[in-house]
Length: 245
Image 1 (cartoon, helix red, strand yellow):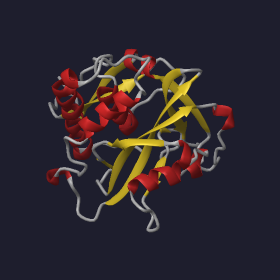
Image 2: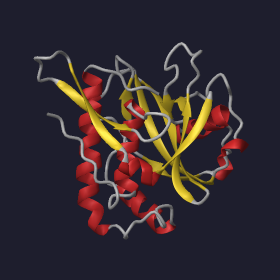
Image 3: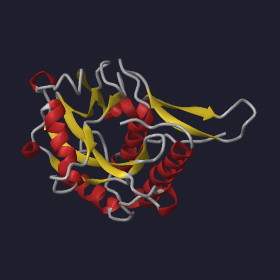
Image 4: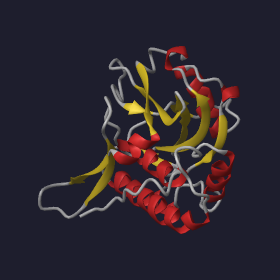
C-alpha cells in the first residue's frame, strides 16, 4: 500500500497527527507502565484495546470518497530472538504499481471475506505465509485513504504473531520479494520527518514521518501506520511529534 500526494495525503497526515499525539497523550496517564519487556503483554493489549475503542473506525465524512473500495493490512507485532519488533515486506520490482516499496502484508477486500480482519489475515497468508491461527488480533486502527484519487480506504489491523523465524516464512515471490523486521526500540529512536510543498513559495504541503536506521527506509502510508501504532502501544517510549512548518 502506498500513500500518494495531493489533498488525500494532507488529510491523512492531519488525521494521523491528531490520533498519535492527542489521543496517546490523553490516555497515557491511564496506561500501565510500558517497557520493551512488557509491550506485548496481556495488560498492554488490554490498554491498547481500550484506546482503540475511543475513536471511530470510519473515515471522517469530509475525507470520504463515494464508492471507494476497502482494503486492509496486517501490522504484525512479533519478537525476534525475544526482541519486540514489527514485520515488514518488500514488494518486487516486477509489479506494475508500488514496485520495490516497503509495506505491511495486505490488499483489497474480496467478496468472500468475512470482514476486513479476515482480508488482512488472508492476504498475509497468501503473501508471506503467516498462519491465521498463529495471529492474535488486538484490534484495528483508524482507516486511511490511499491512492491518488482517494478510491481506496485502508484499514490497519494490529496482530501479535509471537516469535518469528524469517527463514520459515513462505513468500509468494509475485507479491513479496523479501521480508525483514525492525525492533520497536530501533523505530522509536530512528525517526525524522520530511516535508513536501507544491512549490518553493507555497505554504501548502504536508509532513510525513520517515524511519531510518535499517537497510530499508520506511515511509509513506506504512510510516503513517507505524507512527500511529507506536503512539498506541509504547506511548511512554515514543516521543516523536509531527510538526509542519
